[in-house]
Image (tube, rainbow, N blue to C red; front, side):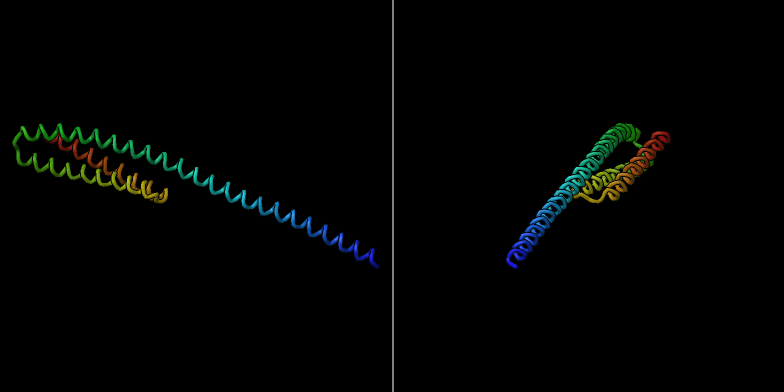
Length: 144
């Protein structure tokens, strides 16, 4: 009887030990997966925002080029001393100011870590507004 109790105790102890080792391995695996998943999503987010920063830099460059063209046109309009030309220039310059505001919105969205879709929408709006400002400048230059 003693022997069967001892064998039963050994079998139970061994089963509990094996189950404990399996539970530890599973726990380590789950924790490792969660850490890996968190790191990979952080890296993906950083890569995505990196391309957004590149697009923002391109927007700022386009804005600066367009702003320089506006400055040159303003000098020509001022030399003409024509009130209608000055009013037309002011309307065109308003479009440039709107473009600057949209570019600032893009920068704000990137810095506050808004969702990728939100940043893309703001980039699209800024690009469209730059196009509107560019077209307004071309129309102004063609007219005067």
